[in-house]
Length: 491
Image (cartoon, rainbow, N blue to C red):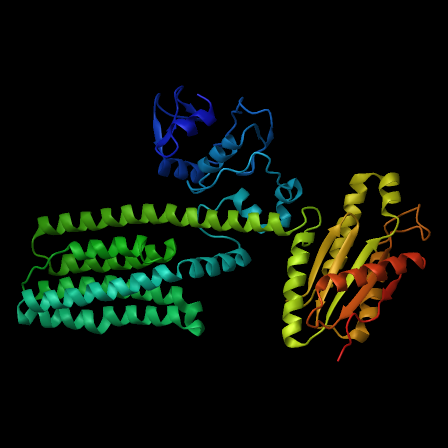
C-alpha cells in the first residue's frame, strides 16, 4: 500500500503495515499504529523514514520533513512524512508548486532550528540560545491558558472549601479549609498576578511550578490531616491534581514531572505513616502511580509536538525572510523593514540612511571562475556586510544578484563615508583573486543616501537616491564610496 494511499485511507486513526514491515521497523502483520504511537516511534526510532515514492505525480522534490535524503513525488507524500516524524496532525498540505530554498535547508549550520530538527530532542531540551527562544515562545503562547487555568483553579478550590464546610465535621474542616485558604488559593493568585504584570512575566513559569508543587503537597496534607483524626475523605482529588499539573497547567514536562514526583513521594510517606488499612494503601498508591504514568506520557508527547511546532514555524519564517545563500535578509524583508523604520523615524524625527553595495565585475568573476566560486565569494562578502548592522533597527540584506543593501536608523551623517570606506577596505582585505578586475582582486562599490522622513515622502525615494549614488561610484571607477545629498533637509 503506497504511503499516499495510507494517508488518504487513514488520515487520523493510524497507518497500516500489511507486510509487517514499516520502513525498516518490523511489526506483526496487519498492525495499525495510532497517531500517538507514530509520534513515539518518530522520537525513539530515527530509522523511520518515508522512503516509498508516490507514482501519481510527475513532480519530484526533496522531502523537507526531516533530514532524510530521499525524494518523494507528491505533496501528500511529503505531508505524510512530516506526520510520521511527529509534526502536528493539523500541518497543512504544501501547495503543489512550493519551492523551498535548498541552501538554507541543507546547510544545517546556518539555522539552529534546522539543526535541532535533524538532531532530535528526545529529552525535550535545545541548545542554550534556542532554548531561551523556545521559553519565550512557550510562555507567550500559553499566557491565556495559564490565566484561565488559574481562574478555574481558584473557583474550584473555593468550591472545595464550601463543600468542606458543608459536609465535614468541624474538627476536620478546620484543618482542610485552613490549608486550602492559606496555601493553595494564594499560590494561584500569585500566578494570575505574574501573568498580568509585564515585570513578573519572566517568572511566570516559576510561579506556575510553585503553585503546582504547593497544590500537590497541600492536597496530600489535606488527606493526611483528615486521616490523622480518624476521618477518611475521598482520594480522587489527588489524582485530579496530578493530571491537571501534567496536561492543563501549561508547565514544561520536566517541571510537571518534578512537581508530581515530589507530590507522589509525600503521598507515599503519608500513606505508610497514617493509613492503617493495608489493602486501601496498596490500591491508592498503585492508582497514584498509574495516574502519574499516564499524565507523564501524555505531557511528554504534548511538549514534543509544541517544540516541533516552534521549530517548524521559525524555520518557515527564516525561509520567507532570509536569503538562502548568504543568510542575510532577502529583498522582501528589506522592503518591509524599510517601511517600518521609515515610519518610526517619521514619528521620532530621526534620519534614515541606506547603502547600496555592488560587487565589481561580478559577472566576469562568474564567467572566469564558475558559479561555485561565485557563490563562495558572495558568502564571504555577505559576512563582511553583516557586521554593518549593529543596532536593533539596522538591517543588512541581499538585494539581488551581486547587490546588497544596508539600512541604518538614526546614523551620524558624518560617519557614513567612513563606514563605507571601512567596508570597501574589509572586502579588499579578503584577497579574493579576480584577474578580470582592474585591481586583480574582488572589490565593491558603495552608494549611500541619507534622509529625514517628512510627511508626503516615501522610502522609495531614499532607495533611489542610494542606487543613483552607487551608479555614480561605479561610473567614477569602482571600489569607492559615494554619499549622495540628503533627500530631505536634516535638522
